[in-house]
Length: 404
View (cartoon, rainbow, N blue to C red):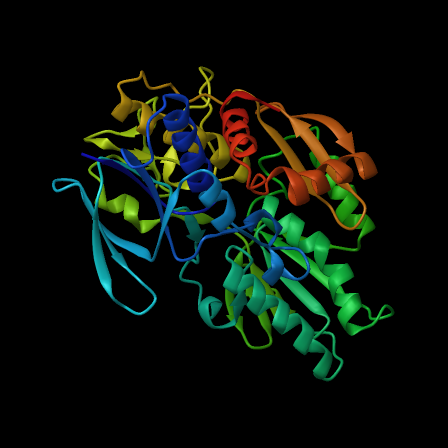
């Protein structure tokens, strides 16, 4: 009787989980008819989320149908609404609103995350985001529509809520994008609002001065120690009472795991991620593995844990898919680890910064050299492998075994 692995999500973790499971199946000489691997997602595409802050965000997708076909991975279009661990089924709703139930022998939850919007008055109505493709496309349309509005200080001003990685990459992209749309001589203004006492709070003391200097070079202002208290159609009011007139406000502060994690009988962290076992199994649900942004997993023995990032999602996915297949094929599962951690932060059209390590972070590259690495990461490394069986399987193996 055929066994079934279902993988929820076609993001970085879901893709690597599917390829890794298929690789082990192939290595053990098991027929795809005897072990079916099915990815469930709205469409067979990878949204290249780390690039949604860039120009033309609608193009930041990569088709997956060919690589799935080359590796005998099935695809089922739809959204998973419910997980029934007692029956071993998932309920799926397709674009037409029809529902279907699929049975699984092993389930990999790689449903990703979504941008978190706190209950700030006006944020839902007037704020933009780049945490999902629809939001990034809507922002892009909004920016281009600014050219049709009367010139004003508010029209030419962008406020970015949050001074973390996403906020900085969005902010440093904005001066160039605005001038392309409004004219090269337009006096644009970009302001990062960060409730903490510094931008890039997670980067540490060595990288931060370079980042701060780059923001100054680009003319980007910062407001520290006070968050956004309210938005309306013409600007924001900060918690300290300062008013900033701006027709564009981009919220970048915070992500939350897919709400599907709440359906599993396991402890979750404040981001909604499941605290998984070393092999990424969900405690209390032995046939379910969580990975990517739905999992909080120890990366090493030093007390570090995976982050909601493409870098961690790919490796987490590779381990989860391998382990789901191994569990069915009588092979030992592997404990996830990811001791190497790097950050390559985009800082505008010609500059980036590349750091290594958790704490302290060591700066290895800056300027044009770091920018080249960032471009390679964004445009080459994180894209799906070629639709060739051996190439795809090697990519999955590398994602599990090769550190930066």
